[in-house]
Image (cartoon, rainbow, N blue to C red; front, side, top):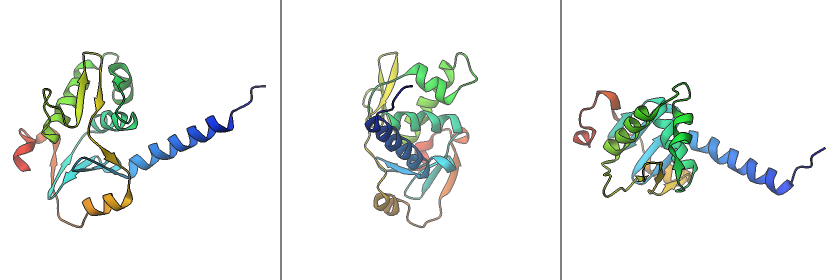
Length: 154
């Protein structure tokens, strides 16, 4: 019979709580991220994203800035695609467009060679920060797939 370490169980429980809290929403830089609604917003602009795109972002946030290899991101966001490289690249490009990010000067998501990515923006689960960003307003809801230039609506 294998004994469980109370410290390891506590760490696993804390990680599970944090992952669940991410689904309720968090801030990433200037953006409010709402995974359960597949929506990101800043000011009066909201952008609707796809579930796989959101999975890529949440996976990067869960890593807290640590390197996440492409295989991990693909398995999370595109589990039924044996070779989801193209879809992963498209998801990263979509996030760069939403955040106004650049591969040369990343402020949100940085590539680590050809093997993976890491989050470089600061994120918060703090409810007070969420309340400030999520003030009542009427968002123009845009679908990321329908936008030719998401920055044009900012």
